[in-house]
Length: 194
Image (cartoon, rainbow, N blue to C red; front, top):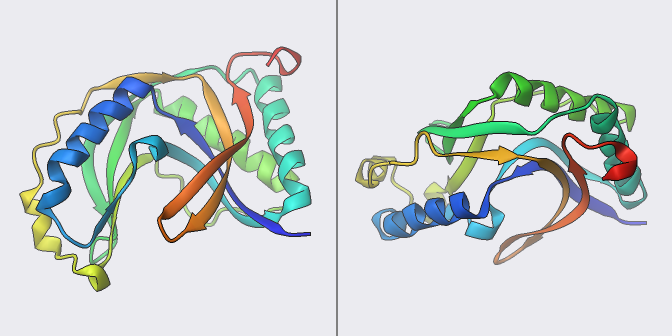
């Protein structure tokens, strides 16, 4: 049996995705060597699981769904904050998150618990809630000084209510990743009513 690459995420509200996509479109020509995130693919990653056996994917999604329902994980009100980068030289352009971040940390811990129950090794990185906007690559001509040419980020304070998590499959293709929902975990609903 094969393996699947997967992760847990929070989707964004469609109108917020459109605003972010407009900002990306306004900046697309300003920087080379950047792979911007497509509007349809914008999300907040809660836990990257890597490649797991295909037979383990559905039980993991179901375990997370049940665990979130048992713990009454409620919808979260989140907002966008300032932008920043990860790495030296920068490899990822991101927007920080504000709002109900304490509940977001608890949600991440519940997802981490479901992954641990499924036998996945612990995520070795500290959870850093953010929204990835772009990935930069020096081999594709990215110059870090070009970040100064970005148009002002005027979306700080824009918010949405995250009412579900999605356990997503990621298929890597030459055109970029393709995402496929495996399990939708509605927040604030009982397991049998979701």
